[in-house]
Length: 127
Image 1: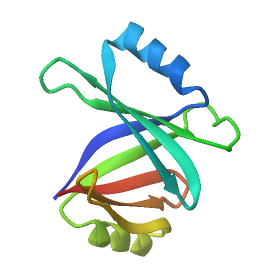
Image 2: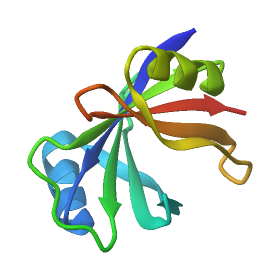
Image 3: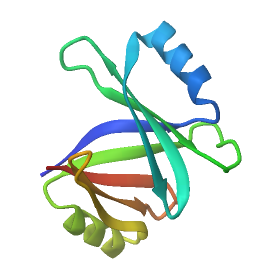
Image 4: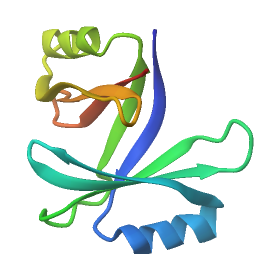
């Protein structure tokens, strides 16, 4: 089974975006993750609401990258099988940005793929 799990909004200024979404949407930072994608360092601010059933918003910043265009985002799909998701994406005309990777410290496995128009999707499996 695969479900849309969260949205990652690509931002140029994490702290400014964090302050905006806290003030306007009532979400708060629950975790900060430092990682790398294709050797490019990134930071993710995981934002959540205290309301039951609230969606997760992740503010995503690629270090050493130019400011993203307006509307840049990553769609995260939680799935039972990351490899199968990646294979389906390739068969449907997508491409692999980063093959499946495991982060036991975060309790997840994930990959990054692009759809045929270049939009980024992240299949994610929680351990």
